[in-house]
Length: 257
Length: 334
Image (cartoon, rainbow over all chains, first blue to last red; front, side, top):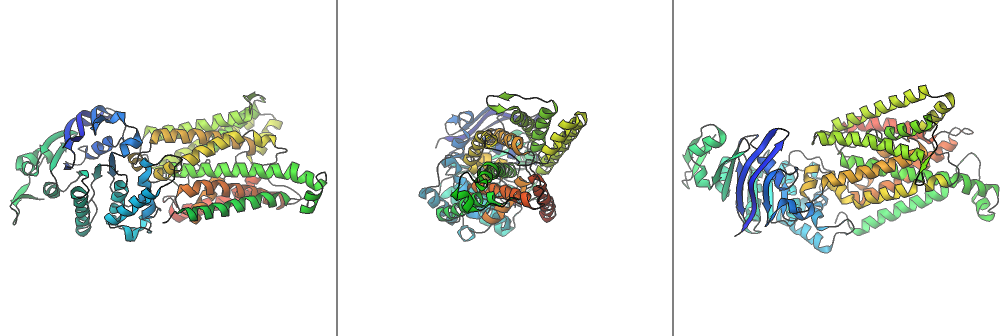
């Protein structure tokens, strides 16, 4: 499979402060990546740079086979979708109205929604298990339901790549597992390339093909879950030591906080 | 489906009906009683004269200003994600007023490319205020909308002080003219004063209408809007330019008529929900009906005296503003 997302010597500065420095990594189509690292490592900044929520930095970001700078914002949104953290959204839109807005990159200022747009919306509502909530206002939903709504709205963009910023933060264990199942479905069945920022090291090691470890704006690790789960690597990413134990059933390494 | 075509058309037809009804009924309201028979039967009658030459232009002016001010209010509320953002709270109207006051104070009388000096100066003032607010928002991206609003209020107070200074430095006649103009009123005679701002207003309204999907996304947050494909900076700049033009054009005609941009979009949201595909049209039509209705009220409430319409909208808007503040602290977009 070809490279679908890449950073080549990418740096991003805010004023004099470098938030990201000399970032290099390559994501192949269909892979599932986790980005981990301590707070302030630049994880969210990297996601936002790829969606051009932030102004452009130095160096190169590649999406598909072209540099990011060659995309118009709408065209980019047909390649990449973005799921922000879902803490306490106050939107008065219903779930369906909110998801419909995800079709924006397929509409022009003059065009109305077509039957195909509506079909896509209904399909995604079914897939994410939000069909029963379609008429509820987003602001009345639980954290997990809001997260699923955001994922649905991103999915309906029809992009091959989905970037998620801590999709399970603020959720209880049941809702966390629901989101993980949903993402696994998207990855396995729909073939969406996923890049997720997470603070959950075990989760990162469990469900992902590759892991990017950031610290203070620099890449300190790129590799597989097995390579990640060593004391030395984790020490390098987080600057502290972890206790690693073998999983009682699978034998894979896990950390205890 | 929540926003199917049927519902959309129903709301549109209803609002258009209300709009047409107002257009026909409001010109009959005033101190001088006139009857439909009089107007229809004899075009040369006193009733016809009053209807066509005095009242109709005034109703149309009210509709134009009301539609524009509420569309601008709606746009600001989506763009800045705050239900209290209006041409007034963001200082746009004060900016336009300052521009117009300078024009009156200096005793100028010029026009540029068919646009009167007053309109031009009002546009300059509105743009200056908008540039300041936009500058603040660019300077610190993700600045909370409360702070943005406070900076707008500060700009507004600053400009108002400058207007007071101008009044103080003016001779009595100019000072009185500025004061009267600041009260906001639609006491125009003839159609020329409507035709002048009309093109500016229509262009601005068209821009807002074409950007209705962008407004939906902006109201969910700039990050999300950008991720869905909205070119945020370009869209905001376009919207700010056109709202500046519109506020300038309208304030030059009617003075700073307050609170229309707050009350009308809010009522529309209560009735029709948060979707700008309906809200843009609804706000324009309801704003038109609201302001021309307030002006009809202003013509009769203290008969035989006529009130400036700005006093009526302020009397309604002040309590409404406080009610909204108390209701949700100006936080949610309802």
